[in-house]
Amino acid sequence: MKLKEKISIDLEEFLTTGKFDFIKLGKTKEWILNNFADPDGYEEHPKIIKDDVWTYGNIEFHFYNNKLFLIFSDNLDILKGGKSLTLKKWILESPEKLTLNDMISALNNKHIDFHKKTNKMEQLTVQLILESGVNLGFALEQHLNEDYEDFLERCQKTNQDKYILCSFSLNN
Image 1 (cartoon, rainbow, N blue to C red):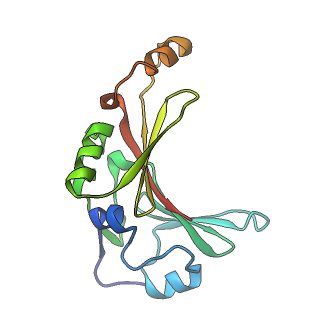
Image 2: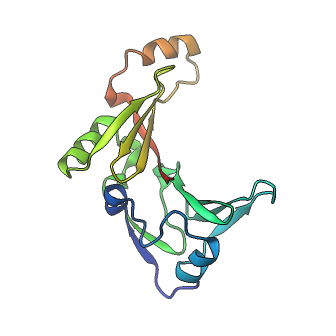
C-alpha cells in the first residue's frame, strides 16, 4: 500500500512488547500489502521452498507459505527503515558501541525481563531472549590476523563488555 507518510516504528516498544506497529507474525503477504506499507524490495525464493524475504530498509520480513514468520535485522550499525518506515531507535541509536552489559543495564532499567543464553561450544555468541519474544544477538569480533585456536581460548576468558549487539529477531 502506498502511504502519504512514513510509518513510525518505536524500537523500544518492539523490544518491550514484540509489537512492530500492528504487524503480527502469522499475517499473510496479502494482508500486509493491503494494510501496511509496500516493501522497498523483495527476494522471492523458488516455489519449492515457499520462502520470501521483504525488506524495509535493512529490516527483513521473512515469509513461509505466504505467512510472516520472522522480523529480522543484522545490519544494526546502519539501521534504516527505508522509504516507508521512520525508526525511533531508542538504545539502538549507536549499536556498534552497544555491549552486552549496556543492553542488560538498559533492559533492567526499563524492567524488561529476559534470559541469557551463551553458545557453550565456542562462546562466540550470546543471546538475550526477551519476555516479548524478541531475540537480541551479540557476538565477539574476530581479529583477522589472529589464529582461530588463540581466538577461541581468548573468548573463553572474555567478559560481557566484549560482546557487541549484532542482530534482533522476532519469530515463532
